[in-house]
Length: 182
Image (cartoon, rainbow, N blue to C red; front, side):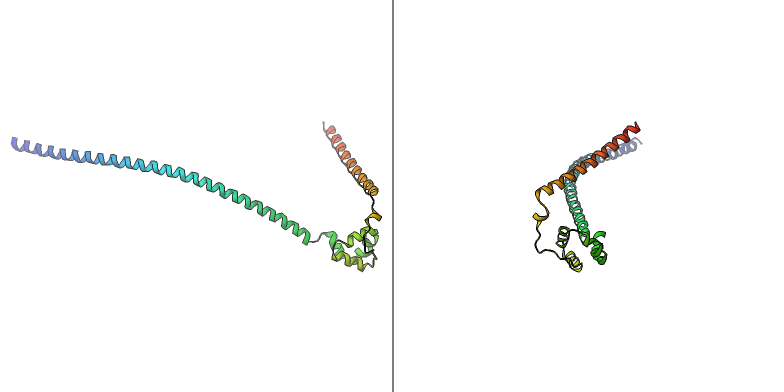
């Protein structure tokens, strides 16, 4: 009996030894795999950081391009508004084109010769309006006759003084209002 028990013990020891070696082999293999995974993880983190930096640079370039496009669009909007102002006539110009008879009788005839000449030189429609009103204008525009340096300077000074007075009055009114509040 002792032989059988000792034989069985040896057999189980051999099985245990082989199991232990297998477990050790598995642990060594797992450690190697773990090291490889950690190396791959570090490589992946480095690649991710590099990709993030490149992406940031690309996004910055794209945002700069978008800002440039935004500026171009704003300029185009401004130009379109200006074109609309030019193409779409103002209410005053509609008076010239739509209410021709009223404009020619009531307004154009009340202008002095210089104003009529200046108006007639603005465009084709204004020249036609002057012709329809049967206003005779000189072929040449003589600015010296109507304006000289003194009259222009006097007119400018008068307008400038008027603007200064208005600005002064507004400032005075604002000061009075603020004093009342206090």
